[in-house]
Image (cartoon, rainbow, N blue to C red; front, side, top):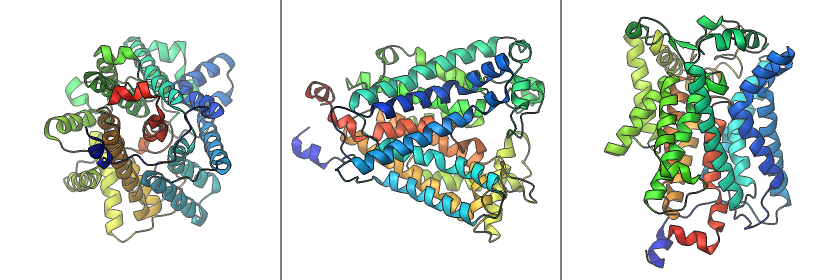
Length: 457
């Protein structure tokens, strides 16, 4: 490629990062956050089993605290840096989301605890995304962080296969997961018996199987937050193979990932065994994208229109139970908007995490939850996701990286879960995906030594 042609390629945006030094405290904090996201629930279960202390059931709070620590470190870095920050569009959209959510929080008349709980679920991931773009990583740190996400995900998948093939007594007798779930004071579904819990069983396939299907939950103890992580790791494994075939840089992926298809196969099997409808539809969309070229992550508005129209048609036809309950949540929220309720009921006043309320608008749908609480403002995350997809595409072109499109494809899954599942909100199932995207978009990748840059030429 000629220098003139290379200059015409879209250039990645953001503040230039130093070639050396990095952010050691932030690096340690992000490592701790990755470990907490991947293994935190299992660690809490073991701690509760050994001590009986209810405090272990609230271990998810450690993830939130680590996110806020990263936000604080990023602010300190920005204020102490002599270089101006030129935020990319994706970061500006994320900041706008947080400002809008905060304004709705101050305007809400609900109990402060409910407002804080729902604000946390909406705002923490965008804040984390911006913080990771702000921090002055160096390239070796980015490589190690990417490798940690993928390697830990493979471990989670292996542990998931082990527990899925084990007798239910592993959970009911040895680990007594029912007592752990029931002891959580803020979990509205934790008191369901093991055999009735949708976290461990799915009834969607009962007409075909004749019985409930056990779901793979692994260290997450929850399949709908586990599935996005397995999908993310699958995309990272496929990105590594694409780079190897193109003799491009590995971008921090371990060599064994690109040398064998086994990691991708393992992650695919584990993801399917979660019996997550979002994961299954995502694989279908992925195949269509690779074969036909559509749909793509950046076509989020077309996908939104198709999803909303489908939900309304299914709702009108009476398909609102079982596997279609998530469609019903989106349909009810769409009808709520069409009736003129443009500002919602108030933050914390509706959705899956609300107090006593007369409305069940939008339950089981992330977008539906948002519409019920904040009305039209719930569509803003779709603009944010589109901006991330566009930036990832431009960055992959500028770096001539054949793996970038695979990384961006994870946004298809998040988009699906935002339409159809309340698990798209909050840190547990989403922080890792947006973490990897923020790290991929970080300009420190372009500070590689000359011998590394030559690999991508």
